[in-house]
Amino acid sequence: MWGVYLKPSYRGAGIGRTLMRAALDRAQADLGLRQITITVTATQGAAAHLYRSLGFQSFARERDALRIDNIYVDEDWMVLRLRE
Image (cartoon, rainbow, N blue to C red; front, side):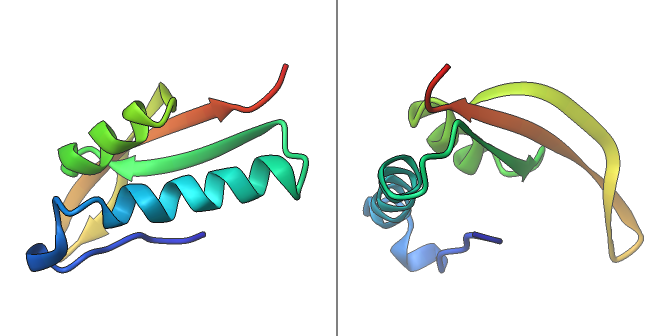
């Protein structure tokens, strides 16, 4: 999965959570993954909150990871351990 975006009018309706939960369930059951690593820009607080509520934990911040219109944005790295 690369990039999750919802139009503002669809946010808060549980769509992102439903999509992420389905992807995580599939990854755990069908793919047998041990862990999933994601990144979220530091400016996307709602997305980071969603990921934390799904069990992801932050483990690093990459400074100036992205440059968007000459503005540098940090990215937070998060991991969800599915099995030890």
